Amino acid sequence: MAFLVYNIPIMRKKRKDRNYVLYRVSGGDDTYIGLTVSQGRAFWKSVKIRVQKHISRAMKENKDWTMCNFIRETNETIYYEVLEVVRGRKAAYQRERELISELNPSLNDF
Image (cartoon, rainbow, N blue to C red; front, side):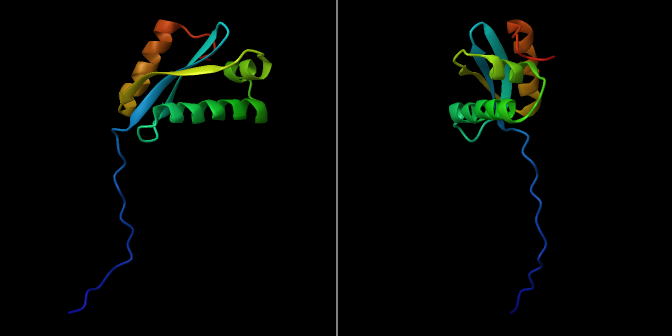
């Protein structure tokens, strides 16, 4: 008995229930609230990679964003911390807006 196999790519449904990490970057009195996708359960590592991306973009690209200007001009040590882990994209973005309203960070542009 022979089987016929078709070379058709199988499309997987995108997950809607990923973990998102809400984090705070601070240096001196200035703070920034951000959001990144979690790489598995490595929440701190996910935030570390995202902060490195912020620093890299600030140094390599000529963006006139508040966060980029702060990174280029500061002599302060930059610290970061995990605030929360939220399940689901919509809930994570909503919680980020709530935290920005509550904490009023100085480096968020909007």
